[in-house]
Image 1 (tube, rainbow, N blue to C red):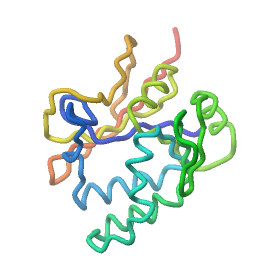
Image 2: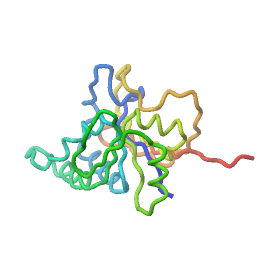
Image 3: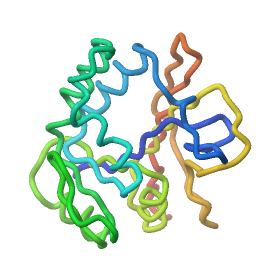
Image 4: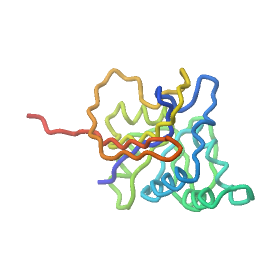
Length: 191
């Protein structure tokens, strides 16, 4: 069965966006960009909310930007053909290799898990990830922790009153001091 993963840049105090709406501190250097590109190669479909979709639209035409590094161009070449599902009640259409849904996240994940296909089901965006987490649908959390405290904003982890035990699968520290953590949700059999 395909795994559902949640991977984003996060401040040490747990936010993906600061209180002022800024997230420039998550801009990866080339080493992290290569890592994220390798990670996205393992994804078969990416689920996202409207805000993340609108942020990621830049990559639809990124190859036209002469200032992009080779790792960034490689990311765009992997990201653009990747199938995406955008969950929004306000958008009327989406661009690129994306389709639009207005609800039914749990049903969509179950449908994607049931159909044949390779690669993980990735979730991007805190609100969508919180909805999936509340239903127990996330199999792996993959925060890329940046060495900054932003003091508030949009949290990476859902603020539900629910305990989730995790098993550490992998850690990696980059020259930029970003630390990637990979935790699998511990699904232990009841005794």
